[in-house]
Amino acid sequence: MPMIKTRDGTDLYVKDWGSGRPVILIHGWPLNADSWDAQAMALAQSGFRAIAYDRRGFGRSGQPWSGYDYDTMTDDLADVMREMGADTDATLVGFSMGGGEVARYMSRHDGKGVVAAALVSSVVPYMLKTDDNPDGTPAEDLKAIGDGIKQDRYGFFESFFKDFYGVGMLDHPVSQAQVDWAWSAQNQAGLKPILECATAFAMTDFRPDLPAFRVPTLVVHGTGDKTVPIDAAGRAAAKGIAHSQLVEYDGAPHGLTATQSDRFTNDLLTFLGANGAIKQRQPETMEA
Image 1 (cartoon, rainbow, N blue to C red):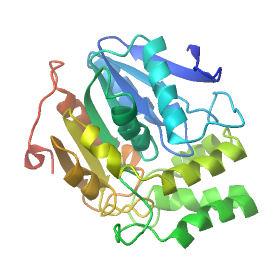
Image 2 (cartoon, rainbow, N blue to C red):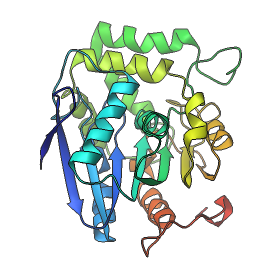
Image 3 (cartoon, rainbow, N blue to C red):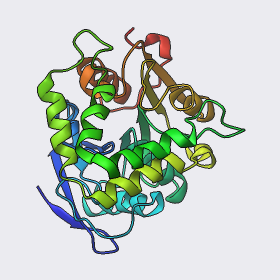
């Protein structure tokens, strides 16, 4: 797999599978590109080019001291697209924190080369509870994330991933091995990137970015998501994005790309269109 250099010289690890119209997969916090493997394989087998990369500070990418703000990380996305020759007819798919890079790319880079987008369990448009965002998460709860990591990083993530995958909420959400893999993946990330990215996704207001979405946009969110609750996220994003379709997974937790992997993969492929053309469909036509 190639390593590319960003405009500020940071090395990013990129996985490039298949050929066809590019689909850029942007992972969540604090995971890496491997979290997309099931979808990347299905995309490649269905005639798409699946490109997934480790965000700066995570996985096998470099860990610079700075650059963990959404403007810089979105410039990284633009650099990946350019260096991989995937800046034409591309679809951007962002999971959780990765949804922020999709939103900021649409505004900061004017959606260059993008024909469709998907926000999956995404932090967009705004996580923080404020007077004009009453469904958001209280500031003290978001601050507790950083405090917990600083006090006992490994204990914090052991508990975090149980909520992430709905352990105890669903009968058989994922195997213990899946939870263990996620815990080990966060070990690849640097402490500063983990902390600064937590601040970035918790405090960045993407509401001004929403009008920049001028392409068909799929929004997928679980109604049982305790990590990024749906009211301030998926439902608000779909309301603010023109040409969007919201698909709610009843009772699904945050990590639905794993807990409902087959369903999500099918929904994504259907949205993209089996013949390679974007198909805009109403939410009720999606699989229930």
